[in-house]
Image (tube, rainbow, N blue to C red; front, side, top):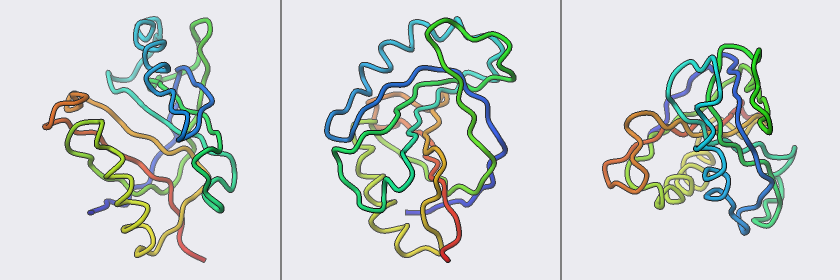
Length: 160
């Protein structure tokens, strides 16, 4: 698993979120509610889609797959001047991220995440930081196509 270390500059997002856990995965429900309405969002910067997880502080300290977190479906915007009804704003703050490319069907994404958290992270000079985790889906994303690609961003900080 190869990582690129990048410094993210703040991003402004508008979208929808749902509380869920890894055991009770509601990702499909979330995206089904978001996609028909995404064109209502003005001031989008590009056509990229953002799938984000906002974990409570300490979520990974004693990881339990039943613990809840916010799962977001969103797009990046230049400002928050117009926010469609029933949508929320999210700011991803500046910070250091390890980025990875997941190649293959979205249904096999768990394999890439497993490699990141079980192999790459413990052997790196970094630990998880308390900022949103996210995946960026651009024109290379084709859901369950074996040639699909998405970029995974994991918030990191130097180990103490």
